[in-house]
Every structure is written in structure tokens, then in C-alpha cells.
Image: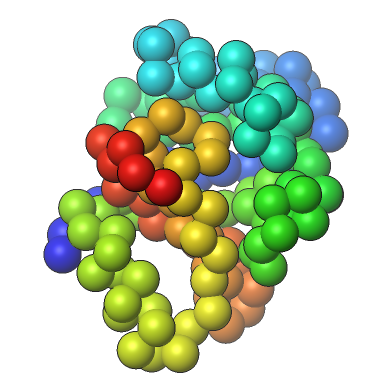
Length: 142
């Protein structure tokens, strides 16, 4: 099972303000591709109704998202990745990762494919309550 840091997600009550701050200060570019455009187009059917701006420094993605304190409740999950934000690792074996979590007794929320088409997403919390996403792309089942 391989892991690679993929993105940092921050939630905000003012998406234009946060995006402009990071674009201006750190010269982050906007990601404009079909995969990321689908997130905003499909979000109202997933349980998350906010907009997301996708930025990059050329290597790492930054997902700035409108805060939604109800996402966990709407999705019937214990972890809400859209309240404070989260950071993300990409893996090539999401099922193996879930087995590892189960073996170690770590509780998690299996959101399946809910935000980005083909990404199977699992969210958990570290011992300090920071939310971590682990996802595998190109998964087309639940």
C-alpha cells in the first residue's frame, strides 16, 4: 500500500477572501480541469452544498471550501471533513487501508464516492482531532 500527500483542505465562511489571499500571497494557480469542475457541479446531490476553489503550487493541491457544519449529519457519518478542513493522503489500496484502521481500532467515516467522481474517500481523526482524508482515485463502486 502506497501513500502520497495529495491536498490540504481549509473551510471558510468567505471563499473569495480566502482564495484571493492565497493566490496573491503565494502565487497559487487555479486548477481548471474536468475532474475538479464536477465537484462544484455535482455537490448539491452529495450532501455537501458548498463551493470549492481548487488551487495548486504545481505539486500540491489546495482545496478551499465553504464551511458546512451539517455535512457529517447529512451523510450520517461521525467525521465531518467540511467543518474545519482536513489534509489528505492518496493511496493505491483503500480497502487495505480500511482493514488497517479496523485492525488498529481506529474509527473512521467511509464516505465512499461522494465529492469527486471516482474518488473513494475515508475520513478519520488523529488523536488531537485533526481530520485526515485518505482516498483512492479511479474507484467506481461505492
